[in-house]
Image 1: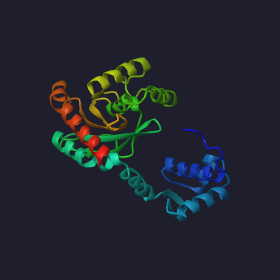
Image 2: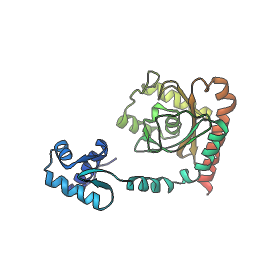
Image 3: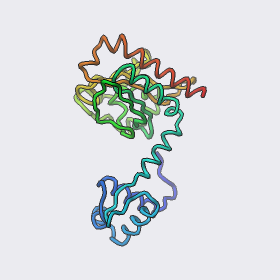
Image 4: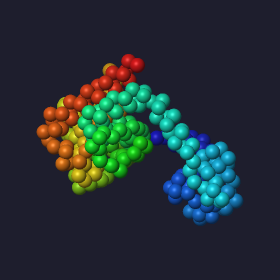
Length: 253
């Protein structure tokens, strides 16, 4: 991402103050001012403006993020064709498998969960809609990376690195590239406890008719149920079919 040629300092200051409040889970003027080494008067003006426009709630001098962010986030997600065309097939996938079904897109080199549906036997995971994830650490992300251009992948590696989430995470570029080649050959990606221990995942890319990757869809579950036989004989086909449906709908809708 390129920096702004003529950045507006006041806007940058407002955003920094807003991010600080969000990261703190809510804060008062003094706490924000101390954290950013700004004057209390300056911080108060920015917080008051954000509150006036509905982005912060002022609870007797304690500011916290408002539900306006949820509203904006939902609007952004729902305007994406892959979400609009993917939510119903994703629900069906969760119902058919009984597990957690996920839909992810990539933005700025990071994976973002834009829809998660839980089947009847689904376990509770640490991911929710809006959760971000390094692409190389999960089946969804690897399915997306596999269908990017090599130049774009290299830029992501340089910017984001390949940090480990578990001992099974692939952190070597050559090893990862070999796996991405295999994903392109078979059209499916696997996560062998690479993002979280005791959790496995199978994913397929959502692409346009020109082969451009829009996102990926997956099923996640505990290792006890994500056996090799079940993944091969049941889940792989269901995930691939769901990804194909979303791809077709996103291309021709």
